Image (cartoon, one colour):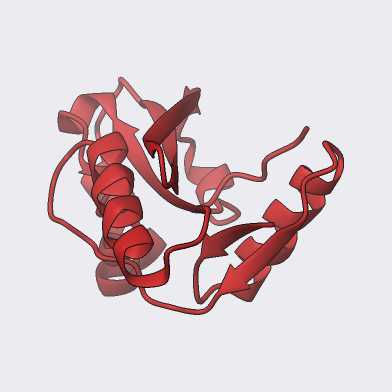
Length: 145
């Protein structure tokens, strides 16, 4: 049995469905993950998985995702959820006013921890931020097998 550390039931259901396609059974540990402040989602996920494994002592995964906007020097990065919760999508879009380079990438890191160590896996999906599409932006990209 593998566990995901999250209080987000939607994230748990989505990950469970994804992993079931590979014959992996996933359980949920409803706990807040340690959130170190850093620009690198891989490091954030690794530290969170190490701490979660110390507390729970079961094979587990932890993830972190950030939206990296080229013209904003990678901002908001792993602070995406926080920024959107404080200024909203309109406030974020205001930062992009007059910016021609609208290239942005979602970066996700998943850290797996068990008794042998911590292993990280990363992925990236890139595109452009467009004003019309921003209203429908999801901060957590849907994963597919």
